[in-house]
Image 1 (tube, rainbow, N blue to C red):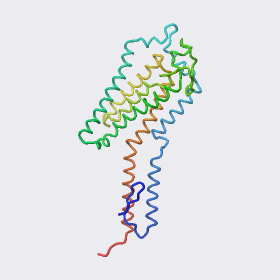
Image 2: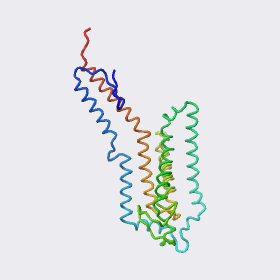
Image 3: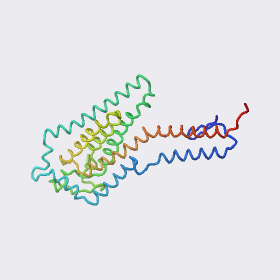
Image 4: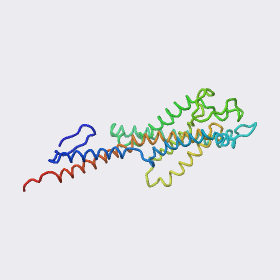
Length: 284
């Protein structure tokens, strides 16, 4: 047997009809390439469309932001729900859930490596994906990039709601906020990560457990709106951007390796079948 260096494809010894064998290999590789491209209903494409659509919506109609925040604003009192002990405790529950889940993920990975060596990371791709998604999504992209550089003031700092800064539309970089700014919501991004963590739930239990997790994450995100900490656009775009980061990472770290392996196996089986049919029969 011979091996082609790029891609790790294997083929049997070339039969007399070599041109046909090369065509089969070319079609198989093209099929693998096309299968990896995003499609309209692909999660990556859906998240990208969500980012573009929500950006266009809030840029075109900034009054949506103001109207959503006005629901929770009271003249002379600001955002009174931010002082409610129950809502404060609810906000802190998200931090507790995040710490417990991350601790469990890291402990599971350390235990697996201690028992089986570094090879345990291969079988724990979902856990590795979740840790990477938390670091890259809420960590680097949301808090490290957007909240540090875009300078959008929070609702409590906007003049309409008793502050001094003018309202800034989404994606506009300004100097009205120096650090830990409003665009986009870090807590909404972490809440979206809690939803991503449902990939660890067994498939048979997801119809029961996923809806409460999604509801909890949405309420945690809307809690920031009620507190005057974020505009509605901060929350929506935080979910959309985080979803885009998570789906890309999931494709690269979890689903793509399996897809590629299965495609190679199918291609190899197809070439082996063709080679077996076209190979000359030995006399009995």
